Length: 594
Image (cartoon, rainbow, N blue to C red; front, side, top):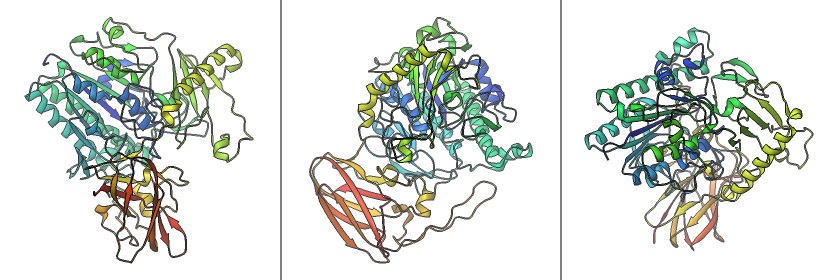
């Protein structure tokens, strides 16, 4: 096993193609990423999803994210089908030690968590952003409490440093044991909140970069610094020449530039592309991807052209690392082509990019079909989306567009009318692609209730809600909304349900206020004092049962017992206020008692 190459995947959050010096950014200093750009294989037409959780699902599964059932970052639609074999499963079955350090964002409870899906060591935070609703209360990037194989443990230091330091310890252990390793390092930076020490961002502010973008750049510089330290550590351990390092960003830039509603650049830098995170144009989904080639395992370092995507990495690594054969993968292995020295891959390949930040999928919403250098784009805005307008008609027509990005990277000149046959071909491809995956996408990914597996369910996973409570800032401010949770009872019996306004670790009464956390102008914006709700009673409805309880000023939760039969159920909760209105329970703790 010792001759198998080690693998490290570094995945950053919201860092786009233009967010590094070697791609022309006039402000950023990224010497280690620049080194990778020159000394690794650089995939020059590499594409991801326009949003983070879908991109991660595609990497982890080797499938289109839509087919893995992950097409949003909210509403529980970031929970990935637990029956899908993950990249960690493949590596573990291939004799590797496996570890993840950072952002998972594919499910917060059993059996969705990384430690349940092939990772020997899983050090993560809840949800998709530090400080989101499922995360540990009041985490703010500094000295936070993270989950280590499901146990809450406080770590000292800045989040990016913690992920890399922990990964290094994991790597050292495997090197000592002479065991090949797969190390997944998905940082939460440079995603906001933009909490970072001034020594990383002040230089950018001094150059005239706006405050938020300066901090975004500072977070990238911190990542770059850690990448350099990690590569040097591997060299010091004589492991660099047997370790494949892969770096890419999960979607287009979020903060490296500002664009107008049509995706045109207003300020900042976007490497000549139109659009950014969460849209449909090239800047939303084209990203960097560097793959080192130790001992020329993939031939000489070079630029490689042709359409590739994050779901190609798993089948490629399966071939390089002699892992078990892939199961129902959408990705195409690049191994043979790269090993033979090719510089152009996948001629005439067609792939689909879909932007679907919704509870239920919607056909024809925000998609791009890519073939060679051509792009069929159909952007759907708030003004033109009949589903968002509450009707089946729209006063704004949405016409598909076609661009040749080899001639027109900025996608200014729509050539749809000159390419009618291509439009038909690519539209049909999209329609068939969507229909083939719709059944899997439509499936609820429920919370599982079973013996010995207590779980926490949060409002982050509400379906059918009008206002999202995805952040602890929302929890503090209070959100006058509700939704339902899907629950699969695996082991029938009696369960307790503990309904809370705040999580247990906050230790705040239902009618209480979360205390204000003052701003540190250098590193953090702080947190506002929480809103107080006059909660007087609660009820729970599930599996044909409804129970209610009156509540006092001192109560921190409302507790219920339900006898549940096996099967899929819908859970609804309510806190009633003194004025007759109600809100949902933002946190629900459930466990089997008999």
